[in-house]
Image (cartoon, rainbow, N blue to C red; front, side, top):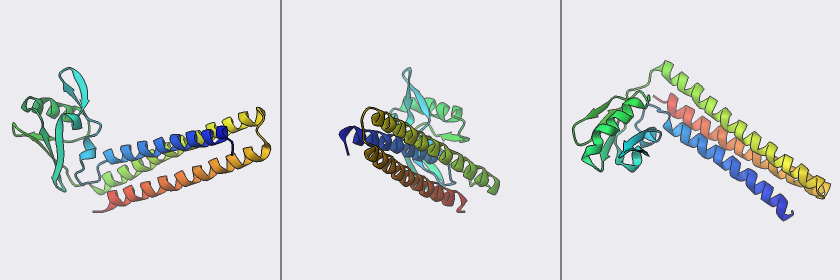
Length: 187
């Protein structure tokens, strides 16, 4: 396989990896009834005029399966962190004792679980679309290389490799979605 073709395949794999990473990040933020520090990954705090991820201004832990504890590194950050959590629309009610913030994660209802499963499948479909888009871009580049002098056999081999890659990433998405769905539906 030529260097150019290998570059196209590697670029496609990189795009597919990004789609998987994005899916895992999005699913990590979905709450499945258990406390997880990643639920707060999307929360940004006003830190001296700069929007900063909450994990960069506080220590986040889970002392038990139903509680998230946030210990700010500076006492003055307790109020801004509490405000940021309330304004994040995650549906959490933080409790502030002046030194740290606790968030109790309520148990999920059956209806809420079904809604979350639909959201998981929607995120999974978004990742599949990204992977198919990466495959299309890679195949277009291979076709362009073929017009520029790449042999037909090498082009076919490259397209087969890209398809195998696409199938492999599709299976990864299925496994990730299945695991998250089981996690959500487990009581």
